[in-house]
Image 1: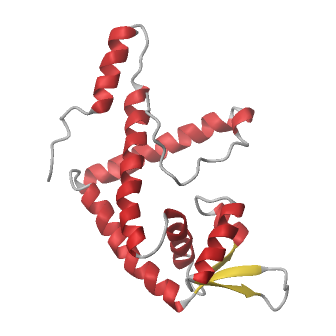
Image 2: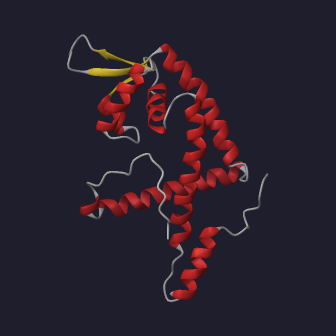
Image 3: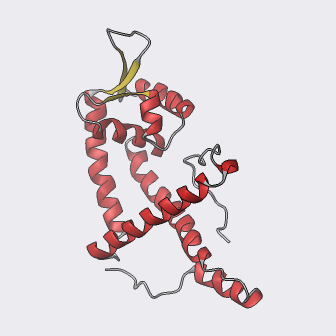
Amino acid sequence: MGKQADISDAVDSILEDWARERPELDAGTIGVFGRLARIIIKQRVIENSVFEKYGLTLASFDVLANLRRSGEPHRKTAGELASSSMLTTGGITFRLDRMEEQNLIERVRTRTDRRVVYAQLTSHGKEVIDSIFAEHLATQRQMLEGLSSKEVNQLSTLLRKVSASIDEFESGNPALTNLEAPSDRPSTMDPS
């Protein structure tokens, strides 16, 4: 099973420092956001090593996975891809150009409206995503091997609640609603 969960980590040190320096403040949220930030950085480095074996990035993997899970004929417009992925429409267009060069997708126009262009998986693209997705899931399972299945489900439920809480906070703050999410590159910022 790996190391026990009761071992201290760097975030514990940060929390101890704040408790000593500002004991009147509850810095417990750093325990959540600090760990999430550190986990995401590590997770992206590990998963990028899998993607790179297939000549992919996180963004191109996201597009392939998005198309594959959409069902036959495995195609979506750039706008549909952007709304159901972690990329902007500008990022999608750039990514689709590269993926078309790699023969992972092809652009298909409809007969009824030639202005509508779909990105559709090629047979090669489908083979690639089917291969990498199995490895992707195996890697994720290995990263979480210190947790039982029940704990993974509990964590997923708690993270869904965190996400909903942040969405609610964001919707109540108009200045935040037009901000774009950061790029798919991991940040090196310290969470404290």
